[in-house]
Length: 356
Image (cartoon, rainbow, N blue to C red):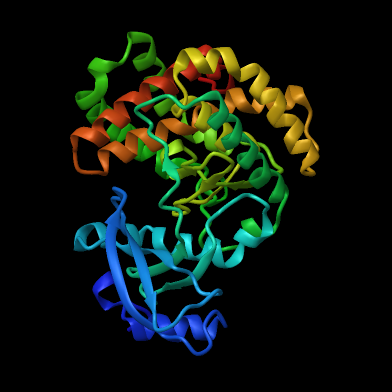
């Protein structure tokens, strides 16, 4: 049982009226009508834009909201729920969103079922913002916006004990040193190559082979102090306006390093030639932002961590592709991003951080 609607057809004007009254956003008015439209292309859940009609004019209640629900497909919902994705997203907004100046959506309601298979987020309507596309390399302006937001998040939780003691943030180095992830990579890397190997250079495949056999080294060798990483910090999980960027989809928060999200964005959301031209200056600026936000780290250490964290994207691409149903658009994304991530690792000589 839940105390909230689990799909859009269950969300009634009466339920929303009661919620807005509890939040003191409505006094005398009531919700009389909801007009709903599915938006986005989420795989693990669905996003619905809700236009709200009230019984009388109101200056305090929202005219529209976006509702995020669990997937309708039973198998997808079970997989995401059992992995803790829904629970993690609700928990992030409930426990940590207010602890960072990073721009995230305003939440009007958050709830997750006891079995963690159903959830609901009611968020501010950002449907007039533009989502990024990993098929197209991001602009310098959007890249600077993304790294500025990443620095706020990383600095906010640098050395935090709270992120080490929650039950929804993955800490692979503590849990098993990356052993389970490495076992999965060894099993699925050959299957990944069957689908995407033709897109990769021999050098990229060779680095992939080398990394897959040493993934646990990458995980266990990450040095403390740690911080909170979004972990899938790519442009398709961001909404851009002319003046700001909002980070969404908090279903995979992890304990990571100061450069985890920054390296992942530059590696997967920026064209390789642009990344090569921009990365030195951008990481120098990123380091300054970390320092201004309270994280004491040298420029030399930042660059070293950036090089090392270039490997962060490999597991996400390999297992993400193998654990999802083949689709033309998503396959194009995985093919594009793995090529960029592997080339980033080669350009930065990330193999230096692994050993035989």
